[in-house]
Picture 1 (cartoon, rainbow, N blue to C red):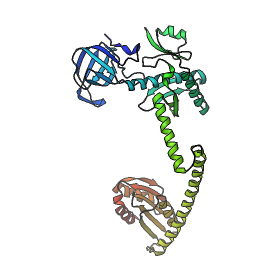
Picture 2 (cartoon, helix red, strand yellow; picture 1 turned 30 degrees about the vertical axis):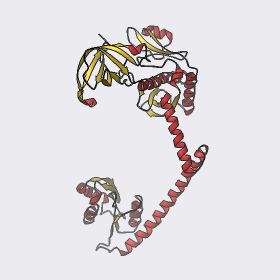
Picture 3 (cartoon, rainbow, N blue to C red; picture 1 turned 90 degrees about the horizontal axis):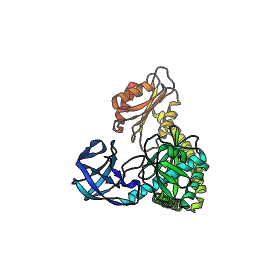
Picture 4 (cartoon, rainbow, N blue to C red; picture 1 turned 180 degrees about the horizontal axis):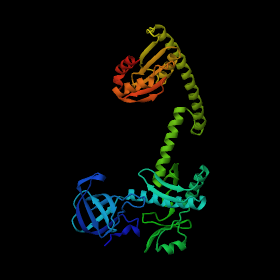
Length: 403
């Protein structure tokens, strides 16, 4: 005997009465459920189980809190609750804000998918209703920004028309003759959701009664996911929340830049140009400073019997990119070996003026083998990073001994 699904016919009913057919201890370590929960089977329920991209309802059965709802292979619905439930008659209720939010998102998805397929030839191949944002995956050509805007405008126009959303029952063949958006290969009587004049789609989820109850649809972005295009969207209360947060962000940003929200685009563009110029100037200054510091270090570096000058230095409180400028400036001189590091990060850079008898990458590998870390390079220029910056001094001493 399968559980009767009351939400199939009345998705706005938030309470119900049912018979408890079974109530047993329940555990699912994979889902993080220990041994303190119970699994309850009812003869009928208003609580929706996770299915078809839509998460489960939450609610109560008597005094027990429903923490999860699952669909079993035999079409029974398992209610996972936080305390024992006695067999017999029991009153249940659903958490209405969560139910209505899911109804807004799911009906909004049907409408958005219908528009993308009808107007742009992009069928939906999957749907996910997330905690804060929902997604549909579209198959076909890349949708342009104009197509995304057009789809949102068309869907919202239908929302504002407040079209009727109807539950229909029939076979797959009957729905096919009625122009179903996506045919399903299933026998028996199916349940479908019809949005007047735009969409008919088999679905077991919960939906609003009129498109006006969706509120509005707001697209939040899209990206390439394997062979498909994933579109992020929010509906109803989520759309209102997202729009309010967007406005707050725009206000804070424009206040920080001391400009009107309408001038943000030009203000940000100007800042980006200024940042690019400042970054170039900083790099030029770091390069010049590195040349001066390198010249000073080389002037005091003693020559070895073979004529080599070794400069080993641990730099502190400098920009990370300065390490390369400094090592490069040192190694421009003949018979110079530069072993430099950053104290804060344990970054290492070993360089020298080309010398066929010396391999800086081999030196770096031996240092990293002993102290741990990652890196690599060529015979003339090798860089890496220690796993523990506390070993920087010891690492340089080892490198010196290997030169």
